[in-house]
Length: 54
Image (cartoon, rainbow, N blue to C red; front, side, top):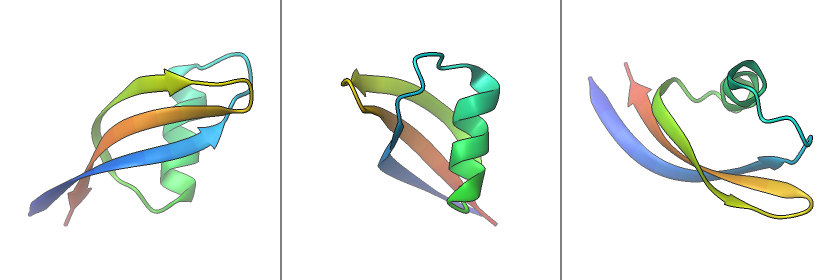
């Protein structure tokens, strides 16, 4: 197993739920071990995520 740290931008839906963010990460083939919102703009969230490579 390997872990990779990434910064990902996802659309700002004005309601950043755990389900919404994890669904967006999985759409990008990211297996999130942990994540955090590190930036917010009018149109995008910036997410710091650790992708667990199996």
